[in-house]
Image (cartoon, rainbow, N blue to C red; front, side, top):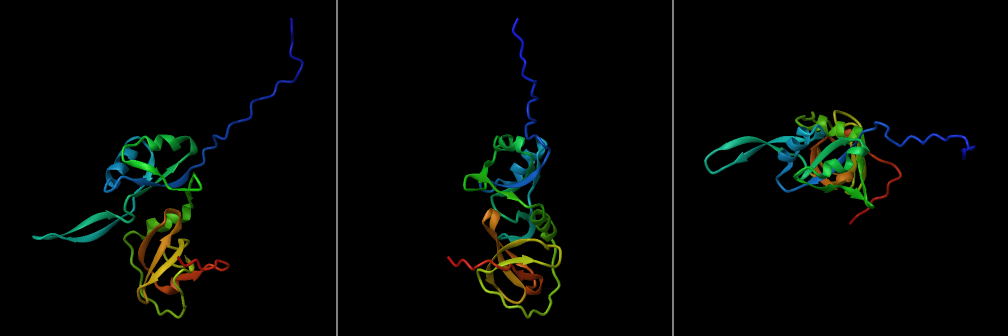
Length: 189
């Protein structure tokens, strides 16, 4: 009879830690709401930021909800759910950087959630910003949101590119609510 004299080693626990992260997904065009419904039906936590816009038809005007970011949806998943999400009809792919899905920081998702449907009161601005500056919202419901300043429309409106999903959105944010992130050099394309 052969016996094993080596001590038993327990299998290291796989990294099944229940840690969820937010990821951005690219959807088929004009399929965001349907895809959101499909994700919800299978129990995957998803977020589709919608904004109300006034649409003009030849015979009437109507307020409709449209995605803040066209063809994008966010999911809050564990790593074990990664491939399940790709099987949902309407999903094209994860937004990736160097071949890996980009995790979106929780504070940026919360800032987007707070932004949807909110307006800011105008304030006097004395700060000077330049296109290309990396900025962070330091006040208000969007506090913590970071991006690159794409354009300055007037005292109140700036266009910020949210880098993780490479999408731009006009935000009605007083420049006094913004701060330039130090140590970031401007990258003008």
